[in-house]
Amino acid sequence: MTPDLTIIKAGTGVLTKSADGTLDRAALAHLVSAIATLIDAGHRCLFVSSGAVGSGVSAFGLDAYPQDTATRQACAAVGQARLMQTYSSLFENFDITVAQVLLTAADLATPERAAYVSTTLGRLLAEPRVLPIINENDSVAVEELKFGDNDMLSVRVAKLAAARRVILLTSVDGLMDPETGGLIQEVAAIDEVFRHVREDKGRFSMGGMASKLAAVKFAVEAGIETHIAHGRHPERLAGIIAGHGISTRFHAAGKS
Image 1 (cartoon, rainbow, N blue to C red):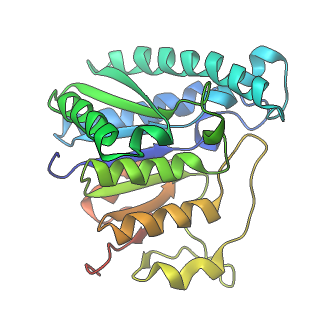
Image 2 (cartoon, one colour):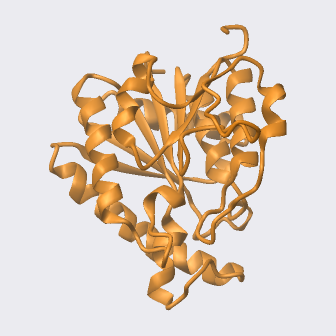
């Protein structure tokens, strides 16, 4: 769809405060500045943002994710509005207009519906100062309120949009070797690293390394280079795109 397109996905743990799940405005400002720098340099980006449920929980006086579906959906409805209002205000400082795109699995389930999404994204990407911000439509889609869904959403959108790379931003530098504690910088074969997975899901995070690796597997098998990187250091994004930033880089199948 767009040459050299990059999909950037930020998880809830990157966007909200661990203490109460409210939006971390300092972290968002840092991330927005980094993405704006990429756009200013001529890169085309799609931004997949989690955080709707997490940013809405405080409105209901909660200190963790609600367990019942109705409250989760209500939190998402409040939180999505807060999230987009914040992004709109921050990106406006860089003369960038944000576009909200809410999707469910059903929107990509058939070629006809996926084509509608593809056409919309293509038109948005034709505007150099417009940034599409994608999230799952959690306020109405029960099946989408599941562990790690935005990781898979990111790579499915990447395949649909023929993206060159996906960068999954999380709370660690990348995939860590549990034996040495060091960062695994390059992965040529995704199936070889599943043994490194350990679950350390936070109270306000619906994802984890297991879901990320499942998403990575989908992406690399579709020919898309994928990275796991630290979302609290978004200034590294430019280096990652240039090929020398701090991340775990998963080579696209057949391109290692």
